[in-house]
Image 1 (cartoon, rainbow, N blue to C red):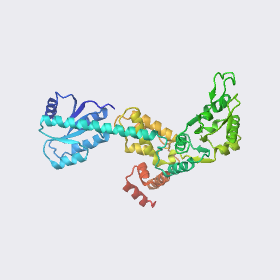
Image 2: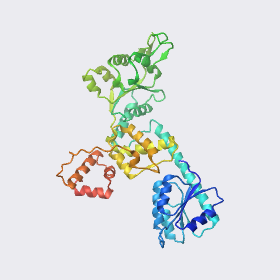
Image 3: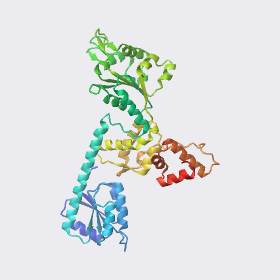
Image 4: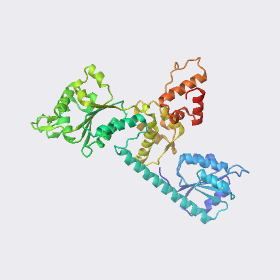
Length: 454
């Protein structure tokens, strides 16, 4: 979002607006005016401003300043960084203190001195630019940290247990099999394991096994010499050789056919291989990590996957929990994605509204972390202000089974059942459960006591 030289002046007195415009006519500002709080908020939603001068009273004979204070609070919801100078027609220390507490950066008494007016605006614009620059720097630092494979976002017990297990086994050379649904972050965790291993200084090479055709499997994995077959016009180095002394990550391992499985098994058993058409035997000096969203034990029973290969792959098997099973991580992940995407697309960072947080926490996430990432990217562009709302997320409506609740149940019985469901969904976490129900913490605890769910 580009911050220009636009200044918003809001006052119900047109003479005041005219006087301010006259005082600033020789300054390089594009002045926009408003006479009501509604106009101010509408304009603030449409475009960014370098600074705002906001009157505290808009109704005739009103001097409390509460209209202006409420307006400043609302503006802070739209843009946490825009400098706001509050204008008051009389000297009142208490009101000045209150408006500063609620988001004003400075205040200007009427009548003003033009030199004072210009100085305050220049100062606040400079402060606003510095604040935005610092925020951008913080976003860049967060992005660098997030892009480091060792920086895995996790606050949930389940995911922290997985990370702890990975760190323990990383120092060995045992083969590891990651299992879990699509989009749970298996490739990221494979990199995480590599970064914590003794092979971290060497290559990490990822191979999508489902993308390799049967007739090119050996050439892709083990390489070939020139002239090994009709199209072998040049020597090719295979994936095992490219990953020498490093880590080879075989993603979607369940997608290889039985013929390919036999060739892979031979290399894992012998720890040696030859290029296609070659005579030199090479060492398979790699740490092997595999991943799948399929149940390989079922595939073994159905003769779709070799039992002996599975034994070679899953010396250690680690299951990655689905996102809905680690709900404590949803909001930290969503915020992290927003920070990264804002930096990528050169937009100001945005926050999540309460209804957006509730929508994120109650969504089922069949696509897991990958779906969450795509959702936040879409929402970043759908949002027209500084906050992402539930509408911006555009998540599909939850299907409601009409048979879920007995038509003879009372409202209290239905409410109790919903609370019990959410308690299970969020592992009894009070913050997440209360947020998903749209309740304050105190209201949440009153419901627990009412239904004897303590």
